[in-house]
Image (cartoon, rainbow, N blue to C red; front, side):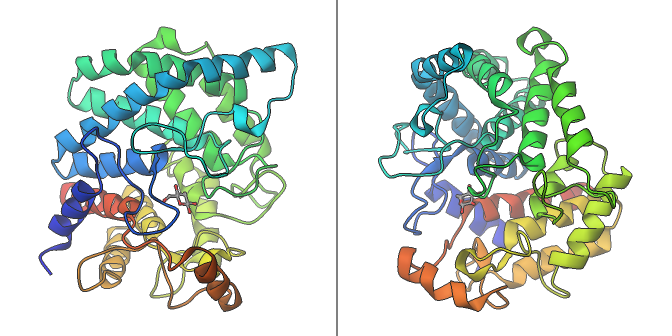
Length: 358
Ligand code: BGC
């Protein structure tokens, strides 16, 4: 195996189509689509690794794809304004075919975090590279998404794991907050006055448990590793905020395997619920921001130890699943779980670059 950085770049480039769309996993039966959440993080990791062109092509692709759904979004917003309840199919999708079309299978589409994530990543990229041309090209998509998020942020919607449709998820709100805040920094007039603060205050008022940590969703006192997003990177609070530190501590207690990686959440049964490589890298990122560099290095080394001989990183690993009885039913349903998962490779590139900088 050549080094895992080069292999990661090669795997991502092989999964990116000429128009810039990036497949979530080239081999897993369900993941032959381009997600905005996965794609943004893959692009962010590629940018950090010096692969600017690949990152830019992804942002361009989404900037061209989203306005194709302007009419769909307008109809939805009109329904909401009329007080009508939209049908599930009225919402914008969570993933697109690589040609930008909608998929034909049923999928948990009403999901908002990916839109916030994409806005956040886009602004980071544009600012980092002074890429006014990209911003100009992306503006119609940005305007569309800000309207969409402004109308819907308080609605229950699927979480980033495409579960729990009826609940409100702080990690999702953090992505929305991060995206809106980023757009406002770039071009203040595009964001309704006070909207990012309204999102933030809602989380702080409703999503902190009695013992002081952020909760998986409103009314559920467990933690989920995606809660790390609240501070890293979306800065709804600072990483040193006591509520964030309490969340990290509970993640460590409840869903970090000693000498292993992190789980998504304690009740996870998807493919039995294994440790997720990209989330383990996220905890490493939080550690870097908290000055806990040795612990970050240990988690990154563990992720490296999970790469296959060909240098592929999975979505999750099977050695210590939370509930073995759920493993085979998922394999029977969809085949073996995603390997490689390009989001895992994107996060790996990001973390290697952060460790170098630090
Ligand atoms: C995960 C999503 C992810 C998608 C594609 C799903 O299983 O829950 O977060 O975007 O896979 O990787």
